[in-house]
Length: 173
Image (cartoon, rainbow, N blue to C red):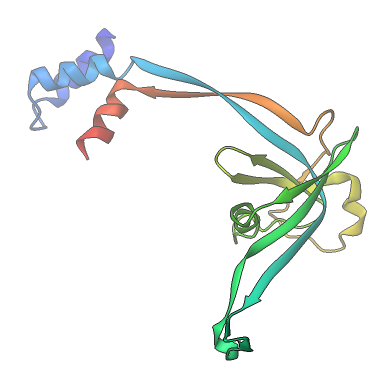
């Protein structure tokens, strides 16, 4: 701690920071807050994704309106996930389908994924190593992972740590 304060004291001549502010920053940098979060996730290898686009037509007086009045009311679908011990089909809503189809997380069959049910966050962990012989050509950034063991639905604990100085910087913006 004394070494940290000494380096700040030498920098005070060069910077336009008061001694009080430098001491405050020096004391708030090593003090942190850790938040433990328990999250329910679904983790497994994607076997199949089936997406249905539901469409309805607007009619005027029993006569079908123009093709421009046809509108989609939503999407539904099914996702089949498996681990080494079990496999299950999940019904998907439109928001989860949108999360699965994002460009960054473009989920396909044989991908190993983690789904956070509460936040609708989809994380692609990589391709299944059990079916790696099916891929003739893969990119340099393709990551192969094992198919998970055990249950599909799991509870995980995440620790988020942040220092008081980082909180001050966030609040000052």
